[in-house]
Length: 395
Image 1 (cartoon, rainbow, N blue to C red):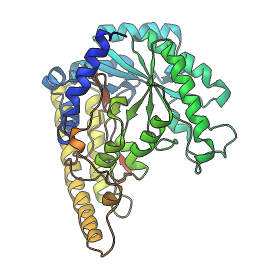
Image 2 (cartoon, helix red, strand yellow; image 1 turned 120 degrees about the vertical axis):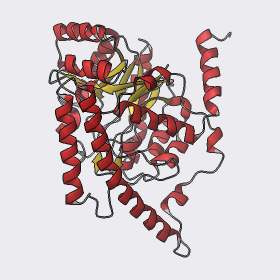
Image 3 (cartoon, helix red, strand yellow; image 1 turned 45 degrees about the vertical axis):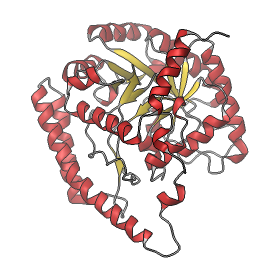
Image 4 (cartoon, rainbow, N blue to C red; image 1 turned 180 degrees about the vertical axis):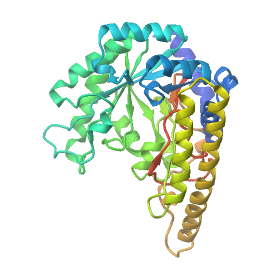
């Protein structure tokens, strides 16, 4: 059967991305974050990613959030989850119409609908200890039997906001997932097929509180769901929070790159005591408050200055934490007969020549700056401090 133009272009793009090294990929993501923090408009124009922000990470005032994204940050994309204090699942038709007017006003496009689909307990399994109301971002935690309604609502929202992606999960985390994994995969397969019939793609987020939390778990889930219409919203920060210390490169290496269609970029760190010292935390919180105050206004210079001050505070804290982590890793390697966690999980083969993400990708970043991104070769440390996510989509 002859290939369509889209298929040919997709193959060309994947072949091009096959030669993207890990360093280049991380460099692009770091560039996205840095450019976002200082509102460097040139990056948004030059990058191959569609870089955006989750609007409610800036403000529940949707007009103000869009103004900041478009005017202060110079971006063209936004991820939708909550507006005007309500999750998209419950906003009215009038509010949808108003939101669309605001998007047009600022020439913004929507990367995806950040839905709460399948953030519920799996029926018949023990009640999960992980899911919380805070994780729902304003959405009601309805029962499993109502998830088809959540899917239909999310598809409808995607069409109204002119995007072809809906974010989903795979149920609150079960301590022993094995008896339920196949059935969960079947449910994801059915949902992906249903969405595909309406030209909507599901992007599964690896979420700390859900059954797919790490890169390796995501690889296993994708392998168990045949539909190519279920892709991945890769969030290495969430993976680190679940204890995948080498979310990059180890978790990344495990992933099928052609099924990554969305990324959340943020940072997560902790020291050996599982927390940042009180003095350092106070400095960071003070700097964060200054950023929040600056974001209330429209002074780009003030936002830049506050962001730079916060980044400097994070640099100082991060440098000490990463130094301590490196020393611990070095000490661990020195123990006879033992290998480091990264060595134990290190896949074999040439990672630099593996296929990277496909022709459509998105990345979402929270506006509050986080710690300075790590060098590509440095394994992440599990995080108690989470700085946010960036939304980028391949153009």
